[in-house]
Amino acid sequence: MTTHKRMTRLIDCIAAPTSRATSRGVILVVGLLTLTGHGCTPQSVPQAGGELARDDGAVRLATDPAGSLQNAAWSPDGESILLTRFRQGYNVGPADLVIVEVSSGAVRTFVSDGSGNINLPGSSWNAAADRIVFASTRDPHDEIYVIDADGDSGDETRVTSREAHVAYEPSLSPDGATVVFESHPLDVEDLGVIMSYRLDGSGEYVSLTDAGADCRQPNWSPAGDLILYQRFADGQWDIWVMNTDGLSPRRVTTGSGDKTDASFSPDGEWIVYSSDEGGLAFANLFVIPVAGGASARVTHFDGYDGAPSWSPDGRRIAFESYLGKPDDGSGTEIHIIDVPEL
Image 1: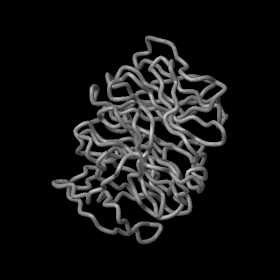
Image 2: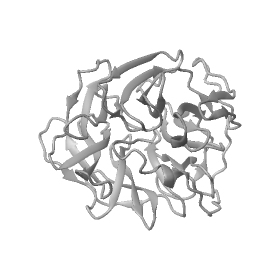
Image 3: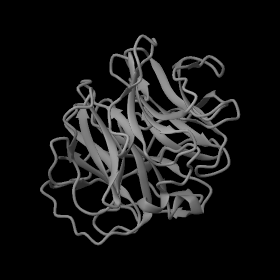
Image 4: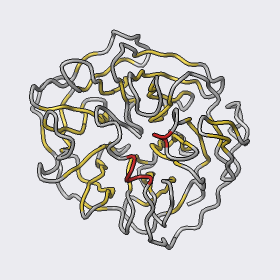
């Protein structure tokens, strides 16, 4: 789960149980994850919260940087994963950006200045520009930054700059020219507005959602024609999509339970998200067609699974996982699962 100064704003609602039994119009066949050529085999692996035993074919990303690993976002070639590493535990800053090679587990820490540097799952790593977009809590307050994927700490460039508003949860358009992000008035935790801004500074800040709503965590579609986001209404979070100009907003998910941390499949036909729907004690991963309809469960785990991202080849989903409520322990680990037959 992505987070900034409001470190625990979604933890409790994601872990809370609901009472809806969800019918499925899609049959899932979750195959055993082999990750041929990527150095991973299905197994139970230790985790800080206890022994992590899974029967859904998901495997842990074999890497060993200390801290809580969160917010997986694939590299354009699918060989590496960008992560936020909270040094002191789940959502406990400072936080660094690291890149992990999937096949070897080798780690490169490339943004690390002692503040909270946090990427969004999904389209944080832009293929067209080979740049990474992230938010940072460095002074004076949260703003958006970009850095070349082969850059080093200190090479990042600040994108947004507003005295009275914070900016975080950024996602780059497929052409790498425009960023969408979540904006709040300074020191206000709710009233999130999705905004867009051109990286070259040639335009104005554009509000895409109403100030009276609470909208968060935008992600671009691969074709660049839609933006998804989560909106809080009627006591829960649901996933919505809209045109890139903010017009034609449409709710995708229905029913009780919180749906958060969403991103697109590479073909733009599906959305993966984290939810406690169906009466789950902890959030697991689900997918749903962009057009709406029945959701389909992807992970089957007696713990928390969240912040998912689809691999560029459409075959795998990476996500953070913890055996229990993540803010009760030292931190999440990254797991990868085969995409089910849909």
